[in-house]
Image (cartoon, rainbow, N blue to C red; front, top):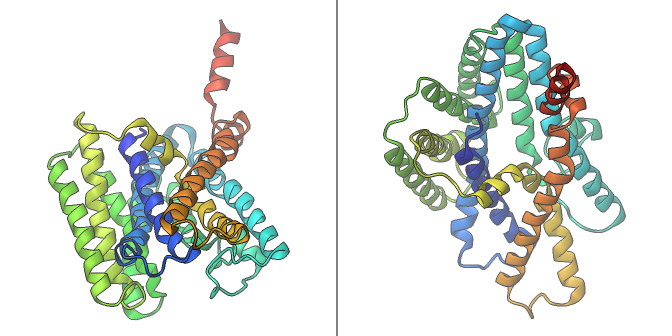
Length: 358
């Protein structure tokens, strides 16, 4: 089931990250809004991780149960193909464009402190940091989570939690013991999304408004705490999980529960931006670099209020995200060849089969 509130929340998360990244791109470091947006904005990533845990687990669980009918390999194939083609084509296009800009111009298309990494590792999203697509570091976590779920479909199709549970425990204690990098704590945010999915599967949808209030309030308190302690680089990643990941879980649950109870849902424009949130997430950072260079060449920095330039840049980023979604993502996701590659029938194929049968 496609929840409109999940799509709307994707839009919110993408806009939060985008707003946080406009500050380094333009001379806005002295803006009075920086302490608020600069602390709260990156938590859009935590929202994305919880949403992914929710959505991807439901998909993997559905296909795991379907394996009893079609076989585990066919379910694995459907999940893996759809996940791979959900992530990589759009990323590769953005990566190629950013690489051309990096090689042919003096633009800084990602944070300047990021060093060059092996190209193959960046293309496959198995290495970071990424000096082409600055926000792509999160995709490595996404791909890893997808791989664990896919393995769960193969090994424990009816009980995918038998795969996910031990991995989550191992990651937590590995972080505590210093065996794995502390950033691996972020995997727990996928677990939060899985917990929300389990509640929804059991049709538990009470306390929707209060859960949403707790989540929003908790995220604001977390942002205040982070700012008081010196920002994102001063606190460990477990604090990020507690201050932003846990509130994100309450927000996701609250909004989904509202929709289940036929309550409030995001409007169509929000859902539309949510559909294109992945493209917006990929394109906004290199786009901001291009726009900042254009503003400098035009000589309008310092003449036009920086707030106007920031709003213009963000608006263009949203439009580019929508264009990328309709030009790249949507055609692939709706294509018959993807359905054939995944071993399932697309709606178009089903329609043609029905016509032939008639």
